[in-house]
Length: 227
Image (cartoon, rainbow, N blue to C red):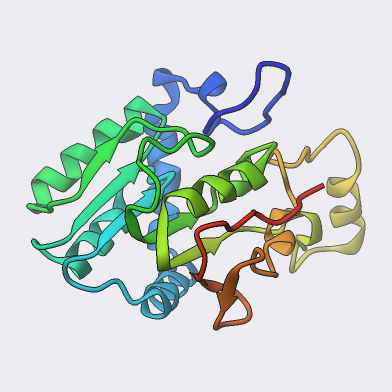
């Protein structure tokens, strides 16, 4: 995901915390999320709003095991190009294997959300799901998305707001005990990023409310402030 040397990321999705010994558990967790009804409905809704079309250039930032990358690749077809950007080599290997088994045209590249390995203004569609929460500087990742996006391109940013998370149902005393220090520590580097992305960056237009579909209208598109 990319961090500066002085940061201390809490997430195992950070490059500093990658472990080949834990990859099976990590893949199992991501697969469980992929199969959850709520995640499936959210992705279907977001992809419908994003409307990837045949022949378009698509990237999936933080593509993990590639499940959504394959869905995007199917939408743009053989005339399009879909690339998953993933820094974890073990997850990338799983994604490549699954793409090959599915006969998908999706490709996967080693990449950093803070320095996408793509030229300026070359992408029509960007999918970025539950990535910003793992970054200490999510505004830089949004700036990178703006850099590679063509004028008129579309972006879906989906993220969690751990700062307002609720444990339900639960006994009030048990929930209160669980929420006291030292556990739980927020599982992400920027736990409230979900609420901070509720407004689109300057220069982007929004056509939905809960999770935003943003169309880039200008080349210069500074990201939002996460300070």
